[in-house]
Amino acid sequence: MSSNSITIPDEIITDKIYLIRNQKVMIDRDLADLYNVETKVLKQAVKRNIERFPNDFMFTLSKEEFDNLRSQFVTSSWGGSRYLPMVFTE
Image 1 (cartoon, helix red, strand yellow):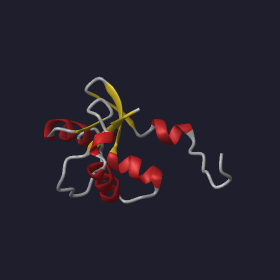
Image 2: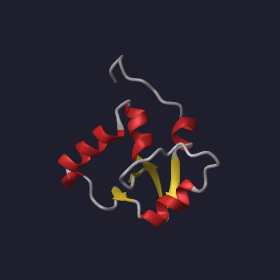
Image 3: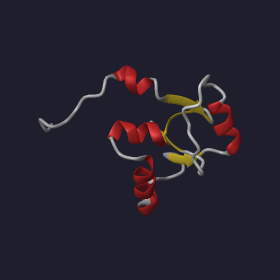
């Protein structure tokens, strides 16, 4: 392992995992935060390499799924994204 690698505490990761469609997933913005990149950069990389992301590894939330997820939070930290989030399975 490289001496430049950073270990992320398990509790930080587990706090960002949600159960959607009976799958444990991480939302694109949380995954981007972990990699220290903008969400749009992550999404562009996925779109450029879509063949590497099968449906059982990544999918886009429906509006209803997104609304249900967003309603679980007391304060809205979701901003005004124009696009529905992608989620990635473990």
